[in-house]
Length: 514
Image (cartoon, rainbow, N blue to C red; front, side, top):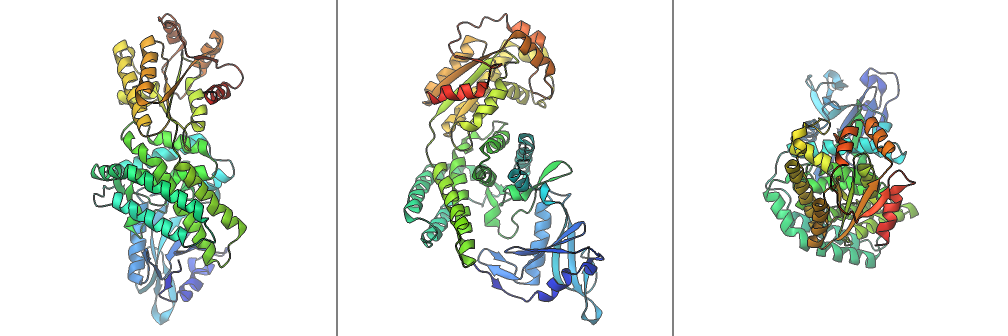
């Protein structure tokens, strides 16, 4: 959609392209987006709003542009205070000459306002790192943790999005897709629309309930890989939506869904699985997981629409543009497909590699973000209200304490299955009643069940336990010897040699056979 230009900014642009305007000699790099002009000058970035109006955005006057800059600064400092340095003004002094007021407090008529940011290289963006295979699971996990922390502290918006707002999004999406038959296959659009409406009918009450319970907040609104960067070794969210609250006052899971969809679209299901599991690791509000596939499909549909509109505005629809829009629609179609309910339990003595195997198979199970992984060691630390790496005293490992941990782990799995996702339970499962409880849970949830018992040579188990560092488990070789004396009864689960070749592949093969 073409914006309405309200002012001629050519004089300001010309001034800001000159290195001397910043007291520099090296070249200034200018980048134009649909809503801003960005200048990379020295160690800083100067971001000036374009003088235009869209139906969803108004930068038409100097007052509106100043307001937008101030709001962008305030909102982004919630997550990236080290990046957002302040406001600068472009002022007209005596004699009509322009000059740069770096802190926005000088004298003279303000011609333009700009957000000033700390400059960073393209290699700091998660988008760049993902494209070059440089986005490790640990960094993705820390990014998801940062998002969860941000969402917990974000302002609650009781009048924000609910079922009515999401219904309007669906209507707008498919109205625009149907209007461009040269880009979007009518049959495919019709099928995705039918699935979207069916999914929406099922989740509409949940949307309104979550809003009433405070899950609609002042979120980021544009949370994809290009808007997360690494600064001083830590992931930071930046460039949130400031110009339209309808885009940012949303369910926190709709915010997260953009990132997960972006990862899956780039064929990084493994990283999407890491992010999704990290985000929900506290086990709270798991009923919201029933919205996740619908939210991701809606995000994919929007991206298809945006990519198509951009191609149409460019005056030519290339093969790559057609391929991109089709990829997004195909993803939306897959996201709206039903998931086969499944509960997988991975048991075994300490050191058998339960968590490693669970994490390895999780991305391949269930829907497009894979399975949700519930680990007893992590649940135990959360229930004790300590950090995962804090060692717990022996009294937290009594039979009564362990029963409470297993009950909580099973509760989380039950809610995961009820929300339409696959769940993995990761615990020792040394007691027959613990294994039986997992099997009963699957039956009650109407889910298929698969249990795997991991084994490895004694020497290998001791070696792994001694070498283990930075892990939630408190198990030691002494604990291993104690657990060997437990009465474990008959173990009917599939036995897997975790020291053998590719045990994860072996488990997936068994699951494929049903």
